Length: 188
Image (tube, rainbow, N blue to C red; front, side, top):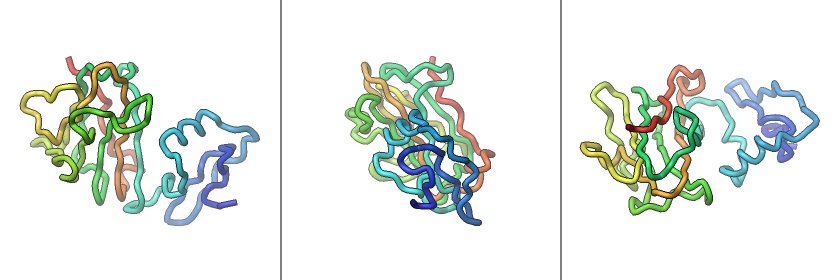
């Protein structure tokens, strides 16, 4: 058995933490499968790698997935939303916000072609920070007036969606949770 994934594919225990001091396995075997965790994990991660649960700064990547807005409502492709990422986004290499179709887990199919916003300028323009250093990302079927192309992710009316915020080479504020994005809020 791979020591980096003690629970294995049965999901009897959560994957262990991997830190600079080594593998930390604080979770005792439960004796049963945690099927909700298994289903959620494999829905997005059809392959499995210990790197997805390592807690090492500036190594690998970390993902935050979101399925509902700040009021607990599922995202509606016909509505407009926004999220604010505070200054100093904790990614040494780059960050990316991508929108996915709830039914297919593929990127949402819209005329925008790449439903993403991030710090890289390819394949879409990079998101521009606000004057205070924060970055606001907008989601909706039409780009709001005055918003940079790189700060908007197009959604599709009639389609539910979810999003993943990725941090490539995450920094300590991600792990210590001293950096936290706002909730995704419905725009009025």
